[in-house]
Image: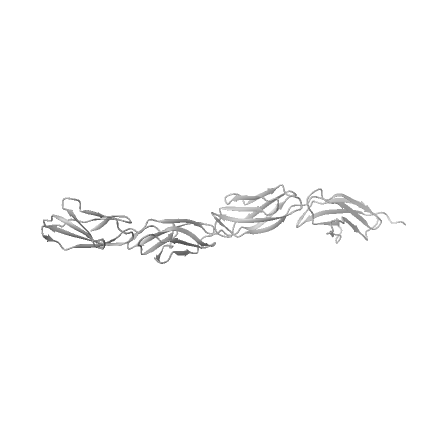
Length: 345
């Protein structure tokens, strides 16, 4: 005797006829539901029982009948299919692990079997009272398909699947190349794992967000920015609905050059004055005499745009260089050359 067709609420059993004897019919019984039916010899050696409980073992007994005589019973136990578990959700996730939970199926079952699709050595059995499990040693930023079935005896339910991503690792080596009105941001891929998208954002008022595919060049540009201005760049790696930790770094655009540099020469000193850049911001100025070691001056008082160089040689040409500075970015610089006056004999 065998169960040829099973569902969650029915069993179809078949059997072979005896090799000898003049039988007239079969008596088929399901003990647990007190179902008793007669199958004439002329019909197929099969019987279907419906209205059963999912995931439940049933004892089926077949007896051959010939007149008043009955054969010894053939008895087998069969399980109906359990119902499918419900609502698989991701309850915890990291760069290397996933924790999933679910709701129990309706009616009867004895446990669960769960695994990661196409990942070796992840299949495991779980008792009926547990509705959560974790998978570790996974690849960061990768999509995994979790497969779950309910088990009853030797029978399994249809599959419940869930698609989940681990968190991607962070991008590395965030850097920029600046002009007075743009920042070109570059980065390297994470040290390990996978990434689908890089999200690069400016936090400043000018804002801006760029999504860069992992399959393209690891660079993006923000334009229309203000000269000499500090910008905070936020980089986030993304895989599916998961986001890596934020990486924040401050970059500056280049300041514009100063204007109206004026140098006045005297016998042994020079004075320098200049105007602010035409637009944008500046944090400080550096002023120096080219090719004169130790002459560099840093001016942090932005309202006092003057400098004085003393103890110079009379009658000598000096080139003054004025540079606007913002953060670690500098303007090209403006040169002005003057000769000190000859000393009187």
